[in-house]
Length: 170
Image (cartoon, rainbow, N blue to C red; front, side, top):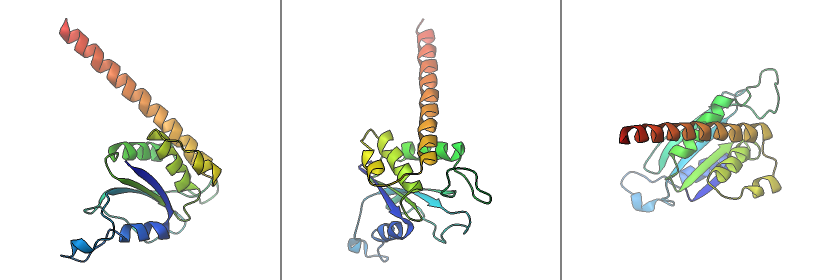
């Protein structure tokens, strides 16, 4: 993955449309990079009325519905550990795309937290996400915890594979 971009829903739509071309006119496409989308949608409106789909350029879409809250709020849906696990798995499965596009309504809190996490997971400095905005800390912290859980599982699986291989070599 060469880059992670965080956008509002409107700017995410514009980015995706830069990959559109009329049938038979592929040479008119404005952008030709591959990308995957993490689409974070609000629950109180049933989403934004916009659903991304895989295409020649879009290699994966993960759509999650949760609200921009830090604690329980009546009627709101909080970000969960299961959602965090889905995001970690999605990022790992789509490391080969050129761009990871992450959006929520405003591109400022939930998606910024996911972007900061994705950049960190990919081994790059994520300090700009915190210096220039206010990522949702609940989302970011749950993603960090999910990655720690995932690494522990991968480490255990690797250890078991090593033990099986050593046992077979005897």
